[in-house]
Image 1 (tube, rainbow, N blue to C red):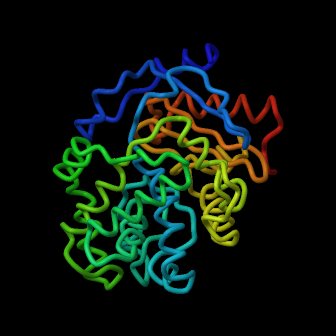
Image 2 (image 1 turned 180 degrees about the vertical axis):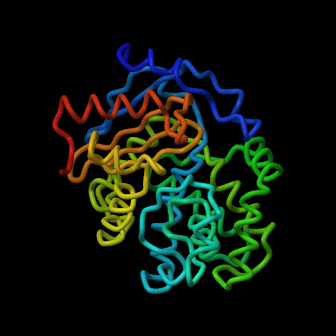
Amino acid sequence: MNKVKQFTKKGKVADYIPALSLANPADVAVSIYDGTNTCFSEGNHNQLFTLQSISKVLTLALALMDHGEEVVFSKVGMEPTGDPFNSISKLESQIPSKPLNPMINAGALAVTSLIKGSSNEEKLSRLLDFVRELSGNRSIQFNKEVAQSEFETADLNRALSYFMKQHGVISGDVDELLDLYTKQCAIEVNCEDLAKIGYALAHQGEHPNDKYSIIPSEIARLVKTFMVTCGMYNASGEFAIRVGIPAKSGVSGGVVGAVPGNIGIGIYGPALDDKGNSIAGMKLLELLSSRYQLSIF
């Protein structure tokens, strides 16, 4: 841990969402889960933080379970992008104008719009239950302050949504979609929760404790593939070379890792690099992968 803590000085916390700017940039914590009753943890692993873009992995799995591949991938593509996660440029140049993949904001918004439910309350309840089941933690909730902060500063995501609505990728009320999306991103977990979610994904959607199937194995495989190709924003290619672990980051500083057939990893380090990834988290995963030969390549 001491080897990576020094890197936090080179990053900065996300300040474009006011509620996230309050995080301590020096924080670093990790949990590793191998399917036994306890996690190996170091640092303040009980610190709560919001999923942010890590939630994109879970909503993708849920949307695929709700609708199947044909419907989901008629709305969003499967290709990586070298552009920032909140870019609108590819939407304008693509024909048809659907997002390139589910891990960028435009793609995640399209995926969230597919979650089944008669109201936002029902959709959010289904998603929360899904996260609780994957983590084995029934007390998980969303942070209302962070959700409101994100909703009030979501102008670019509104622009992405209106563009996609104009081109038939999404339908319905944009502010309703943004309300659900910001609450989705504001779901709070700790490192142990993330490690158990990572373990479930690593074991083809299996419950981390009770060993029954939560996610169909083919959907778990698809989700892990997106984590490899698109999970670390536009640093995904270098991350695949240096680390080689299916992983997804969020601008709160969280990172979930899923080593197929092996361990789940949950990391928190809110100091971010210029791509929006936890700077200490990236280095920690690189050291873990090298030391324990975790790369899938």
